[in-house]
Length: 285
Ligand code: AMP
Figure 1 (cartoon, rainbow, N blue to C red):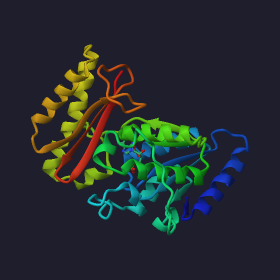
Figure 2 (figure 1 turned 45 degrees about the vertical axis):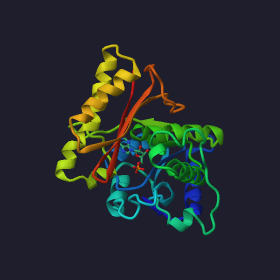
Figure 3 (figure 1 turned 30 degrees about the horizontal axis):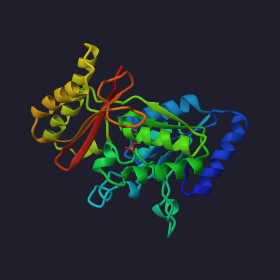
């Protein structure tokens, strides 16, 4: 597996991959953007990329612009050697691991802002977060010239922002969304789970419990947002150590709140366990 450090190296790798796949192949190059500290959730995206594209690359970049000033940029887990092993074992042919200067050359003044979506859900509690995400993903997609890019439903609001961005900018990459990978007890895998104490790890199950509760209600015919959100609140109330950030039922494309859960609506939660902020969601059937 190749380790690429510059945008130019990534572009060269991609163009070579495309030539090998046949110039007109529409599934020549797949990209899996990550911040590293790879786990089975990331592995599932890599698997999907390897299965549906002739050549797959993983990017590993802890993107400073998507962290707020008081957030965990400095202490975000960095496990590069293990990440490369996981990427190689999954069949990725390249890891793109640029420096901050490579992605944001001195004086970089260009940002991508998806108006109307960037300030919803996680964007409401983390101002500037989605601007940072949209900017870095634009840079990655432009550099990789990928046919498909793979993202997890785990970050469902991010998916909405990126789908709109790719469409608006006509980036020519298909956004592929992969299901949430969970621990056996239901907790959604996240690089930030590493921050949790033993006690917090138990309390963290409240998020998936709330999600499951809402799924069960919808299965039994309940569609009213008010009722679904109230049921989730009750689930959280049992565990007062977990501080709710948001509980929302929204249209997955616009992230605007809805009053009834039409099929495809996004039910999403975010909550703090101590300093650690976790998210979970479900797309309602
Ligand atoms: P991150 O490294 O946290 O930026 O995540 C990189 C990609 O992996 C994003 O598209 C995430 O949505 C996805 N991802 C993270 N956790 C999971 C999970 N538990 N299941 C599926 N995809 C995930």
